[in-house]
Image (cartoon, rainbow, N blue to C red; front, top):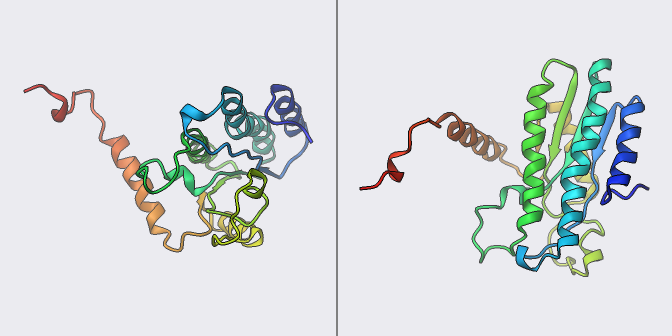
Length: 205
């Protein structure tokens, strides 16, 4: 298995993605390093960004051209609901700014890439689970035994069904899909509401 925390490992997997006739690419590598930014060692910050931002970006880039040429394929990025946790107050959850930021990158990249690939036959999805019952947290020494967790099987079932439904952002544990629709509608409203004029609230006096 290639080490996706290194440039060499990322390049190795990217070469395979560029040369093999892939029909499905799933970017699911992960590291956590849950800690406040001031406490996050530089090497761990670099590893986190390499694995959750650089690796999926470059591997997806390598795979997408061939999928476009063949007129079919699916690109799936695994992020998490923490991508939407930025506005949460300190009292609600521990700070993990870099980790949350990497997941938010996957959401925005997947949405923009889906628009780029419209009409090509290539699907794009970003999967945003909550806490999943895997060894991910146990390897950090965290006891999650009393925390409700989604099974890995349900996560995969949700992601595959989401692909069938044409969902770009798939949140398998969110019952009310309108919650996500409202987020994205607000995003587009803010994007469309920009102006070259300085907003009134920033004008002196």
